[in-house]
Amino acid sequence: MSYAIVRAGGRQEKVAVGDIVTLDRVREEIGASIELPVVLLVDGDKVTSDADALAGVKVQAKVLENLRGKKIVIQKYKNKTGYKKRQGFRAALTKVEITSIA
Image (cartoon, rainbow, N blue to C red):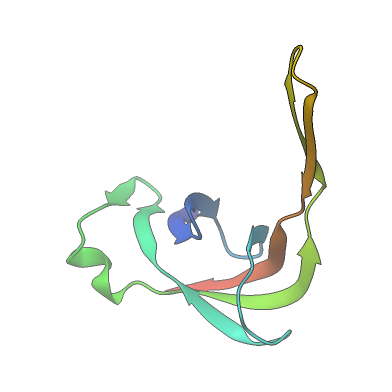
């Protein structure tokens, strides 16, 4: 089984052909193809992490949809001062399908 570790946003994701992965928002149209930078490649027993050897490796993905993440509620409170603050955050995400590792 072959898979790759790719850099996506501020994280690294383990992907194989056919996987559907949720990444930070990508500024591409739905149905467009994007290329993800490879950090590590595993092909059976062979593991490649050398930057020069990975220069020719390409991971192609197709953009399926743009969505928003679950709401995170941030609350701050200080005792005896009357200070309260409430804030929310929803991450902008993109769902992609890995089409090829070549």
